[in-house]
Image (cartoon, rainbow, N blue to C red; front, side, top):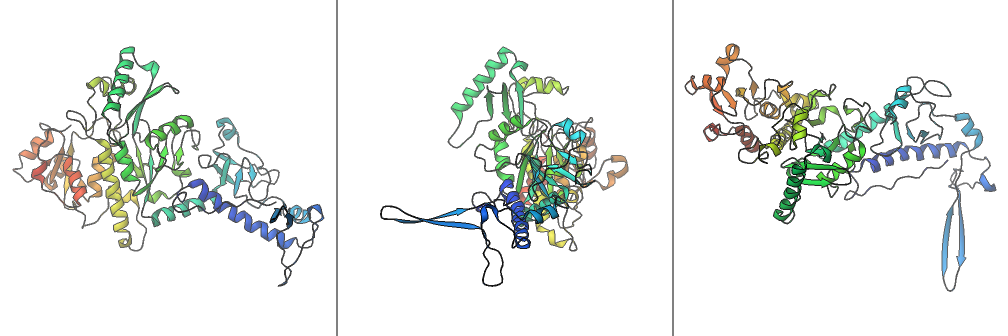
Length: 505
């Protein structure tokens, strides 16, 4: 059985293609095993009566190739016809199924050609083949787990050992390029969507008017943020600075999309965010591809957990990977979206269309997240060799980099009005993480640690912590969150007096 080998991807066009890279690796292994089989089967009969010829050096088999020469009117053309060569029946029968099949395409092993014995009941119920286990019968190996990688190639399933190998190699390749792995959620993180039926006629008309106005105001090279997707029955609004954010992070990270939405929706949204296909390169994981229908996991993301960052508005969907998470505030552009999270009246449409980053609007959240990613990336690669020979870990760099040479290493801070009291994981908020990646230490209590506090980072004046800081006669500086962004951009401690105005949201 011969298997076609994938051509080597060119660095300029497809070096970043998951499918090409993984296919090349798998079929290289297949070709090597097939050559071994042909060598062991020397002397056996060939299909069609072809006689095996031997090389002069010692009788190693040549590929069975028939050559024919045809002569036309005034031209000599040499035509090469390849015949499919199957391994000797006796050799194949003796080998049978692989001891451990590394990969399957539509349940057929890419090495031995045998069909996978069976799949688990839970897999069959889910219907997507995400994770399976052979039952030990019909030549199967009991306890041999496999994982579906259909987002890379439809029908592709890898054994866990082969998946671990692919993850290690991809991690090394990405790090060698000076990048981290970045997993991005869609809904309420990078965009907000609503169905036509969730809007009133007045809201429909307003949105169409906004789309027309945006098209008129677009400058050359700019892309719209508001879309009417008639074929899907949706309006979709991209979060402010989405394109700038993606352009910046793609230079220092290898981005994935990972959403609980279905595949059709995920691909459509990815096209809006990356219309030229230069950022995600097919790395779009939907609910259909996940190993669980209720939570997300890094198990099917190629790369290592120690160099992966996650940006999502919900922490509970990442129970195994919260240490990698940057949890940002949900983006609600449409009224129904805000109402579904008990935030009625808080959508952009209900607030006179004042969006994030505009005067009177909320902070440009994606720029805060970008600052965290850039700071973590800088620490990972700048100080990677200073960790006693150990590989750095972004999970540590996000919360406790423990370096005295970071710009805010002498800062001990409290926050006021940055996160809500109902926030489940305030420690994963981007502004809190940004301060930590710059070396600052968080303090939670005035009563217990007030004597050590140096800064209060606040959005508005008049809070209890701001009033307390004013009583310290300048010992505790009060600054807006923008001070953290300025320190991150300059990679140094910026003058606090420039950010003492607390008029921002």
